[in-house]
Length: 227
Ligand SMILES: C[S@@+](CC[C@H](N)C(=O)[O-])C[C@H]1O[C@@H](n2cnc3c(N)ncnc32)[C@H](O)[C@@H]1O
Image 1 (cartoon, rainbow, N blue to C red):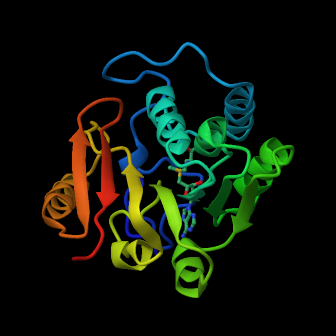
Image 2: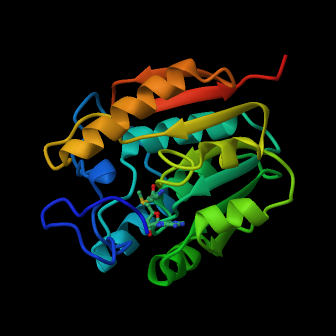
Image 3: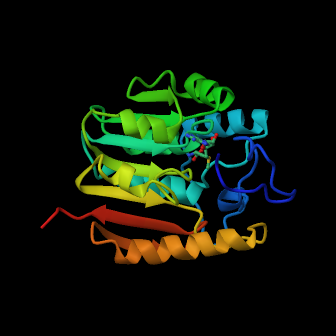
């Protein structure tokens, strides 16, 4: 069970639906709190946003984080890129906009409805593979090439199971997360979770991180080669 209560109601005994807005994703990405967004939003991003609106899906990354994802993806020519938590494909579309033609994106989504929507949006781009799976199970079973960039946009690999994810990242890979700035809908325990995450990131010897208090709160970390 994913241990994040819904933002408005009490904790559900079954845990939140993947469609529920989660506390760590609570900032409405329509109105980023800091700075301004890019003017050149790719058509595929707009299509993924339309798909999100049609489903009432509110957890897509904002355009600032998306633009950063595009920039970072462009720094990995021919790279293997991973996203955990596809939603309807907004983050994936930003990543694809930065990737070279020979780069590949794997994006993992547990919810069939959003995964199908993302597949519909991204199907024209053969570099993208939307995989319907629980991220933790998928990471345990994965034996392919190591990744050069990961956007960890769900609990798995972010607040939980970071070791499991890091073992699949190449030296020099970029580890990217968002939603680290406080939001009024966060329950108390989520503030603690994020504070712990930020502190852990700063002292993890495997990572060279920068915390960026911009957009919804972003961290970018480089995987440091083992000594
Ligand atoms: C913050 S949203 C992702 C938004 C997406 N990255 C974007 O930028 O548009 C988190 C996603 O993780 C998915 N998710 C929830 N539990 C998961 C799990 N165990 N494994 C994989 N994905 C999961 C949710 O269904 C949701 O679509």
